[in-house]
Image 1 (cartoon, rainbow, N blue to C red):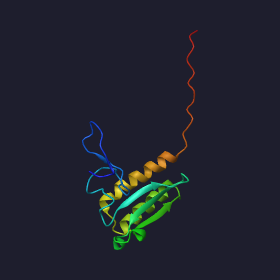
Image 2 (image 1 turned 45 degrees about the vertical axis):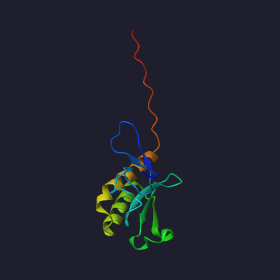
Image 3 (image 1 turned 90 degrees about the horizontal axis):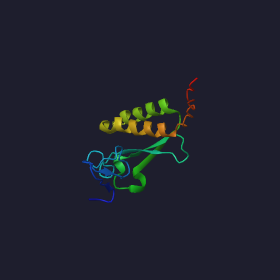
Image 4 (image 1 turned 180 degrees about the vertical axis):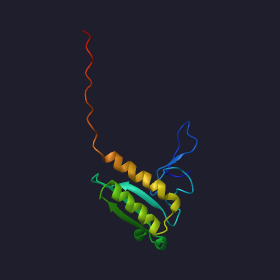
Length: 126
């Protein structure tokens, strides 16, 4: 047990609310607290773009210098491409690359304006 664990009925794998957990699954692989290198994606406070938060492996014992925040606001395609490049160039947990991109694209999708649906007119009988 831990403070971040979320258990619900009829769900086999419990969820986790810990920071830097990209999939929000309670497992060793995705845990953002215990690994030297971990990556997380959060929404920007102004609801424009997202911020990638990742750990520096060399600063594991210095919590103040441990996390690096990198905001991305350049647009969806360019931002996702830059995130992918950032993770690959730094040899940064290749197993988390796809999950990070999914989380980032979900945040960008949630920021899109909702399209107004056209009102359907009922066909009248003559």
